[in-house]
Length: 191
View (cartoon, rainbow, N blue to C red):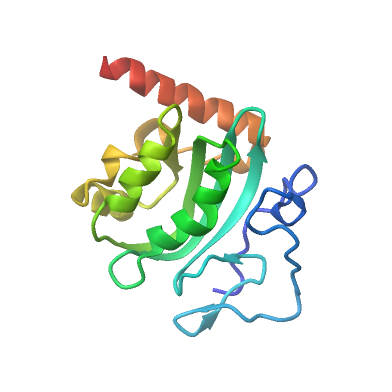
């Protein structure tokens, strides 16, 4: 677990610890000291703690002009035992929506499991971004199936054309434009 690092190739253009609007502003990282863990397994120190025992995040990029954020997640998304969506919503999402962000790209390749509960926080988040959207890319198939069982697909767009395996080769604005175009197609197809 400690070898799974968040994506860092965009750090030359954005770092959440240097963004005065970020919930992680001013955070310092000690690369020699591993203190956070998931179920007793230490994790890489660049993952940001959000109050959850099992879910960690990394804000990879935020554009306040275009009003979007790209966030990578890591660990076990456990709403049943730890109410991880509440921690994620209160610690990260509320902060970003408070600064005008209303389009979210969630990257979930390193989310290893999901345990659902009710959908109240997802619904609240969806209502907060009424003029925007929430998209999840590259989550594991069994996680997306669980999301469907808990009605989370009513709030988060995922699957199909949102499986973007080469996202690491793109600049953040290019990834955003691609995801945005896919969301627009989905909205257009719904009418």
